[in-house]
Length: 410
Image 1 (tube, rainbow, N blue to C red):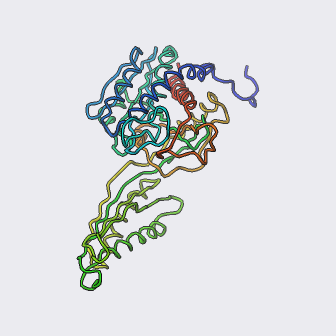
Image 2: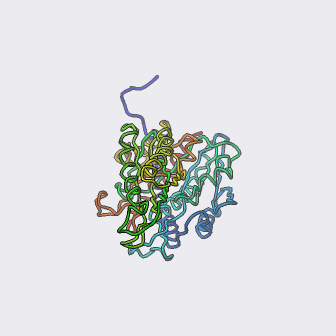
Image 3: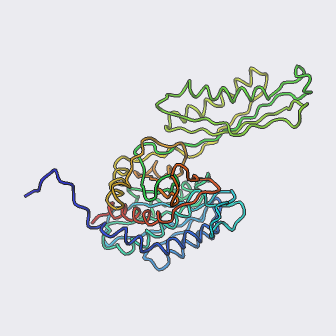
C-alpha cells in the first residue's frame, strides 16, 4: 500500500540531530581554526599545519598517510560494512600578504594570512572526521579525508592525486565534495551549480624587445612601449571578437613595465596577465590566440616578441547528480532557505578541478558573512581585512558529514 504522491518526503532520520552534533563540536573546531590562523604557512610545505591536522585526528579510527612531495595528510575512515568510497577535501595553505583584521588570533607570521578561509576548511573537515567517526555503523564504504597543501597556485591537488589520494581506500573513490567559505554570502548558505562553477586560470607573459635610444629621437630607436600598449588594447578587443559571448572568457593584463626615466626609450617592455575561461575549448583557443596577437603586433612595430602562456588550473566543473545531492542535503540538514543554486559561475579558479576531472563530485560555497555586516559590503576573500563568521563552521561540519552518510548509506 502506498501513500499520497503529492506530500513532501519525510526527513531522513539519519540526519536528525546532525547539525546539533556539529554544533557540539564547535569549541574544538573553532580552536583548531584559530590555531591554524595564527600560524599560516605558504605553498606545498606546511609542517605546522600538517601536525595540527594529525593532532586533531589522533585517537580517531582513521588511517593516516603523509605525502612525500608535500606535507599533505590523507585519512581513511572505514565503515562497518563494505562499499564504495567518497572523498572530502580541505585545502590548507595561506596567502603571501599581510593581515589587517585586528582579530585577537591574527597571523603571527609576517606577510602570511589565511585570507581565503583555508583555515576554516581544515577545521571543518577535521570536525567532520570526528563526527563521522561516531557514525561508522551507518557507513557502508570508506570516507577519504583529503587535507591538501598548495591550492594557491601550487597545484597541490595534482601532487596528492599523483601520490594516490583517489585510491587511498584500496579502490577508486566514487564521489568527491569540497566546501569553500565565502564572506559575501549569509552565514550557513550553501551555494553551488552544476557544470562549470569556477573558471580555468592560465597566466601569460609578453616580452617586447625593440631598440633603445634617446627619447627625443624615437626615429633612431625601435620603441617597445607603443607596441606593448597596442597589445594591451588588442587583447581586450580580440576576446570580444573571437570568443562566443555565451562561452565567456576574461583576458586581463595585470602588469606592464618598461623604461627607467623620462628621456630614455627602453629596449624592452613587459606585460603579464591572466586568462580565465569556462570551457576547455575556449581555453585552448586563447592559449594560442594571446601569443599570436602579441607577436603579430610586435612585428608591425618592428619589435621581437617573446610570449608564453603558463597553464594553471582547469575549469572546475561539477556533476549534476552530485550537485543536486549537495543542494538537497543543505535544504534538509541546514534548512530550505540555506540551499541556493547559483545562477552563473564565477571567474575565480580552484585546483579541486583536478579531482573533478577524474571523479564525479560537487564544489560548493559556504556563506560566512561576519555578523551585522551586509554580505555585499563584507571584505571579500583574499582581502587583508576579510573576516569569517565562525558560526558557519558547524554548518560546514554537518554538510561534509551528511554528504558521506548519504553517499554511503547502508
